[in-house]
Image (cartoon, rainbow, N blue to C red; front, top):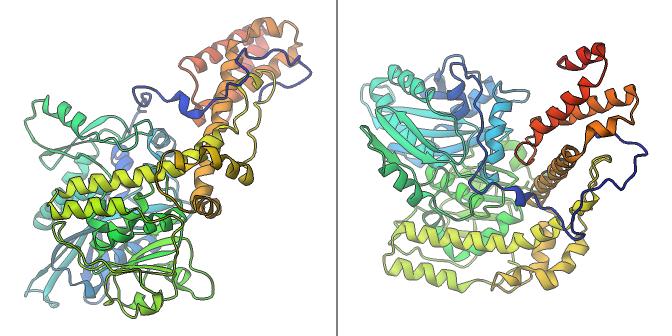
Length: 600
C-alpha cells in the first residue's frame, strides 16, 4: 500500500473531469508484450504444452489399464489414472471400428502444483479468456484404434493414445495425434520417446507468435490467438503469407486455428434451434448431449461451449462423460436440481438416468453438410424414452428472444447451393459472435462507468474503489443503450439479462472484469507515484518515515511484477530507480539493510 497520512489531497493528477479509464485502452497495438523466457530445464518445454502422454490398453483380466506414461517421471494419482482409463475408450455400444478421435475433460486431483506455474501465467495473461489454462481440470485428447485381430483372445486389438494437457487447443492436439498415433501403433514406445523429445525442443506456447513445431519429420505451423486480436478475425491469410515466404525443407502443416471446432457440422442436426441453444448455454442451464459416439458427443459439447465466445463458459462441461466417472453420482442424483453443467454421453443407460434433466439434445449420426437433416419441432421431455429416440431438442424451455429466421434461411440456402462447409461454419460463427457481442456490449459499457474518475487517483492515498454493480441501475441503461443498438432481434432482452445476472457465466465474467479494473487502478496509482519528485518529498520526512516509504514502495513494486500490472513501459524501472535514490539518502547501516533481498 502507498504511504497514508495527513498529506494534502491536492497532489493529484491533472486530467479532464469526465475522463474514466478502461482497462481495454491499454492494449498494445501490435499485440502482447514480449515475454522473457527463463532458463528452462529438460522437460520444461514439454510441460508447457502437455502434462504427459498415456497409452491405455484393454486387458481381459484387468479391463482398461494405463500401460505407459511418458515421460516416465510424470505423476498421476490413482484417481486420475482411473478417470483416464474409462474416458479413453468408447462405450461398447458405440461400435467404433477403425480409428476414432475425441476428447474428454476431468477434474485434477487437489493439491497439485506446477513448478512452471508462475512462468505459464505470463502466457495466460495474453490469451483470450476461452484459451486460458483450466486451473482445476485436465483435457484428454484421444486417438483410439480398434481393429480385428484373430491372434488376440478377444478377437480385437483395442488401444488408445492419450495426450493429457491443461490447454484447450482441441484442433491442434487432434492434428498432433494424427501424426504421432499411427506411427506409435506401428513402432511402439521408441516412437513415443522420439515424439516427446521433439516436443521438448518446441518454443513455449506464446500467444501472438507464429510458432514452428517440428514433429516426426513434419513441421506444424500455427498462431495462438491473443486477447488483443479483434474477435472473429481469422489469422489464416496473414499467417499463410508469412509461412509461404519461408523456404522449408520439411513438409509443413499449417493450422488456421488451434481450438475452433466446425460449428455448422456439429449443429447441423439441430440447426433450427441454434438460437435457443445459445440462450441455454449463455444462462448456464443444465444440458446433456446424447450422441452415438464419443467423437460426435465431444465435438457437440465443445461447439456449445464456444457458441457464446468471446464470453467464457464458466460452468463445468464434460465433452465425453461415462457411468464410471467420479462425478457420476453427483451429476445424476434426483434429490436436487441438475447442476449447471453440459454433459456429452453415448451410453443408452443415460436416457433413463438423466430423464429428469430439463434440456436434452439428441444427436443422430452427423450427416455430410450436403445433406439436409430432418428438422423437428422442440419435443417434450416425456417423449424421450431411450437413446434411440429421434434426433432433436427435448425441453420445455421458452426462449426470451424471437426466432431469427434469416440465419436459418441463409444456412438452408447454403446447403441447397452446396456451399462449402468452411463457409457455412464461418457464417454461423459470425452469427454467434455478433449475437454475443450485442448482448455483452451494454454490460461492458455499464461496468466501465463503475471506474473512478482518473483525477481521483492521488499518489499519496490508496487507489480509489470501484462502484458496486447495481442491477436496477444497469437495467435502466438498457432503454437507451441496450442490445437494440446492434441487434435486429426482438424479444424479452430484459428478461434474458435478469436471468443471466443470476448465472455462473455472469459471475465469472464480472469477477474477471473487476480484477482487470482493480489492476488498472493499481497501475495508474504506480504511474502517478513515478511522476512525483520523491526526493523533494522525503526532505520533510523523518528517517523512520523514509524507511517506511521505501518498504511500501518495494512492496508495491514486487506486487506489480507478480500481478503483471498493465503499466506504461518504463514505469517499473523508474520506480526501482526512485527507491534506489531514496535509499542512498539514508545512513550506510540502513542502506545495507534495505538493499538486502526480502526473505521468502
